Length: 247
Image (cartoon, rainbow, N blue to C red; front, side, top):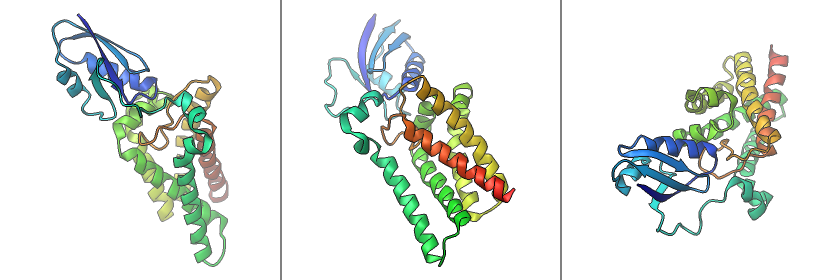
């Protein structure tokens, strides 16, 4: 027997694969067909209660399963490919623009309070703020971030554990830059980490593949765009300058 359900919270193919895998682990489920639109068709070897299917997704609260006959909320998240067209550039990317603005403003104020602008010090504080703030958003839901990140990152696709480790790597980099501890090593690590991330983002943009940007974790429904590529290249560029000057 086959039953249809609706699952909300999908933003990319990574979500589809995650939900399909979780549902097919449920006892009594023979197969699950999952679409990016959230439509789920489950073939059962015996009757499986809706509550049991919902329980299979309980570790990922962003995914909410309901029976197909239940109307979905009118304010369901926009898919990445339609978000910018529907809401406009600033409204779509407002969260990340605000984050950059706050980090930039705070680090410039630090330089003003220090009595003179020091480019290397400002850059170090900016990188510290970037990694600390961005890791915070990823930490709010590490499994959801890892599932989204594995959809386009070249390393996370091959080793899912990288998606779980990445927020902690960013946190460690933020602390290193803030304390100015082992600056050469911190810059080399940033080059490696952000360089890998840049490759995955660039490949997705060149192939016009539509994914949710995982830069701010799973908190905001941000589509992958050239802004994602810019933030990665910005960190790569700053790290390269640090290696050149300090190394």
